[in-house]
Length: 325
Image (cartoon, rainbow, N blue to C red):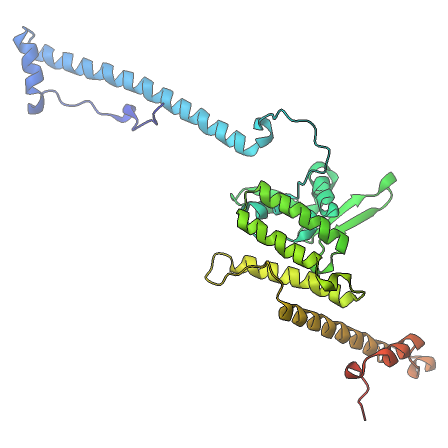
């Protein structure tokens, strides 16, 4: 059905005594109809046509209103209109991340891997099905500007423990802090999500090669926490930068690991770790005491614990807080 045009109820009857209607009046007059009666006949014909147009227009408006209501209902209640597939119950896990992660995947935007770990998927399931957990989720804008529920802005999800005793808290974990097991399972799940959201084949292939290069890197098998953390930090930083530059003139492939950048990443992690150690050491040797706090004689002079002295002696010379004479 065609879309309704202007409302015929607002149409104004023409003046059939005007010169442009002389031909129509003359036909009636030639048939023996008086001039005044000819004007009335023309007016009645126009009124009948207008009434028919009004009825047709109202039908079109009702049909368009019903169509718009159905589209809105389909948009808000998609589950009611899902097509039924003639397929058996899946035997493997179903990858359904939280709503915010789904929106990011539809946009092709950067998304933290934690949402695709088993813990992140379980948190999304709890946030979507548990009425209690709705107090711990936030309202966010989807890609179509509709409001959606996502994990709270603090990235915490409180869940009741078995037996109703106490609560456990799930927090968003940065890619750099993921365990190797979580990292591996998350990359498998996010590739599935990419395919479900119709990412470009060459883009998916690039990410598969990128994560495979991380998995098979020599540092993966080293008994060195800095090397393993450097791989995860490199993955997080480079993937975020790639998404940031996507669609601009500055774009590149992640398929191959840049060893020099990876080494820079590791050096930065080691530097930050030693800074934290020195900061903790200073706090232990010179604790901050609030002004006005009375001190007992045993607090005025003390020696550092043995574990601190051991840490000092174990530090490499280049990182030793004691000046080399």
